[in-house]
Image (cartoon, rainbow, N blue to C red):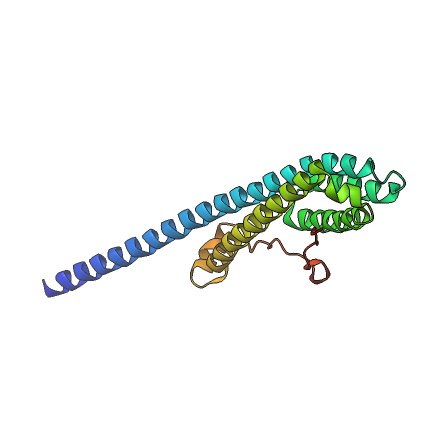
Length: 190
């Protein structure tokens, strides 16, 4: 009888351990799914803000064009960079296109500095202010995206959740990073 009780106690302990392990696997699975969805949402928010910026750019270019008609290369670079953002699908592609657009906008604002009437133009000043607001929203969206990536990557890389994540096919995701040479913000002060 004692052996039967010991064997029964062992079975109970084993069942409890299995239930705890199963509960942990379910928790990790649900957490991975939640974070993956949060990453998709955060990436979409970056896309929305970049779209708002790209929608603003034609108005900005047209305003500057009215004063600086001979600056064709600058306008072409802004247009190419805008198109690149619209085509970007991954965080890396988006960051690269964003850097290209930031550089093109720096050139555009450098051209604008040569035209005092343009710098005083009400429409130009409003567009410039709106661009600054959007830039802040883009920075916030990037930060939110990268924060979510950090939480996800920790779950994917930390033991023992790493085992479960690996079995489910979850891998470390890339951050939305700006290359070192592009980290300086464009100056839009006039």
